[in-house]
Amino acid sequence: MTDQIRWGILSTANIGRKAVIPAIQASRNGVVAAVASRSAEKAETFARDLNIPQAYPTYEALIAAPDIDAIYNPLPNADHAAWSLRCAEAGKPALCEKPLARDGDEAQSMVDAFASREVLFAEAFMYRFHPQTQRVRELLQDGRVGDPLVLNATFTFQIRRENDIRLDLSLAGGALMDVGCYCVNVMRLLAGEEPTAMRAAAQVGERSGVDEVLTGLLTFPSGVEGHFDCSLRAHRTHTYEIRGTQGRILVESGFVMPADTETTIRVWHGDAYEAMRIPPANSYQLMVEDFADALLQSRPPRFAPQDAVDNMRVLDALRAAAGMVPF
Ligand SMILES: NC(=O)c1ccc[n+]([C@@H]2O[C@H](COP(=O)([O-])OP(=O)(O)OC[C@H]3O[C@@H](n4cnc5c(N)ncnc54)[C@H](OP(=O)(O)O)[C@@H]3O)[C@@H](O)[C@H]2O)c1
Image (cartoon, rainbow, N blue to C red):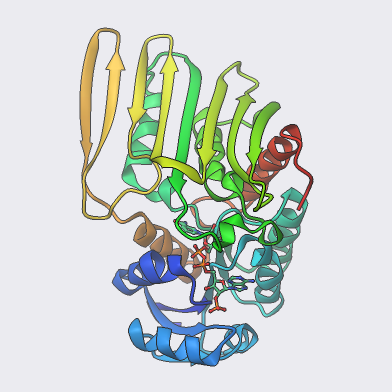
C-alpha cells in the first residue's frame, strides 16, 4: 500500500453511484479500483460510466482480488452481514452501510469477526463526519442549552419506487432501518449514553409488510427524553433539536448535508438567538478519508464499530416495542 488505498465497491448500488464513489474519487487518500455486481454486464457498464478501471462479475472475485485494499459494502440491509463476514474471513477491511445488520446479535458477530482478525471495520454513518455535527456536540458540552432535557429528531422522505429495497421485508427494509436509524444514532451521540427504555408505534404497509411510518421514544439514564419519527411516505425532512434548561439548538439540515452548501445551526440561549453558519463539507469524503487514514496508519476508525452494535440494539428494542417481529 502506498499513501492511497484501493477501494473495491460491492455492487452497483445507487448510493455508491451518487455519493460514495465520487467521494472516494475526490479523496486525498483513496482511489476506486474496482466494482463487482451479480451481473457481469451491469458491472462493466457501471465501471465505464464511473471511470472505474476494473469490473468483476461476482462479489466473491472482488473480495478475493489481491490488489484491493478495502471494500465498501452498500448491499441491501439483509446482506450486509453475509458479505461483510466474507470480507473479514479474507482479511479485507470493510466500510459497511448503515444500519450495520438485521439486528444487534448479527451486528455483534460482524464486529467480532473483524476484531478477532484485527481487520479494520466501520459503519458508514456519514453525517457524523460533517463539521456541523461536531459543532453541535461542542455547543452542548459548552453548556449552551444548560442541562439538556429533550431531544427530538425527524427523518422522513417519499419513496419513489414501489420495488425499492426499503419496501422489502425480506431485505430488512422499513422506515426505522432506513432513516429512523439516523434519529436513534444522533440522539445516542448527543446524549452520550445508551437509552434504558424504548417505546414505539409503527404503521406497517399492507402491501410491503414493513414499517412505513414509525414514532419512538427513548429514555436516557440522565433523565433526557428523546422522541423521533421516521417515514418512507412523508415530505422530506431531516432535522434534530435539543432543548435544555437554558436554551435550544435546532439543526434543520441534520443528516444529508449537500457538499456545496453551507448549513445553519440555530441557537437560542436565554433571550439571545444566533444563526451559526457552517461552511460546506462533503461528509462522505470525510468518512472515506478517515477510513483510509485508519488503514494507512493502523489506527481505529473515528467512530468505533461497537457503536453500530449499540445502535442496532436500540432498533431491536424499538421494533419489538412497536409489535414487529425480528427479521
Ligand atoms: N449513507 C447513506 O447516505 C445512504 C444512503 C442511501 C442508502 N444507504 C444504504 O446503502 C445500502 C444500499 O442502498 P441503495 O439505495 O443504494 O440500494 P440500491 O440502489 O437498491 O442498491 C443495492 C445493490 O445491492 C445489490 N443487490 C444484491 N442483492 C440484491 C437484492 N436481492 N435486491 C436488490 N439489490 C441487490 C444490487 O447490485 P448488483 O445488482 O450490482 O449486484 C443493487 O444495486 C442500504 O443499506 C442503505 O441503507 C446509505
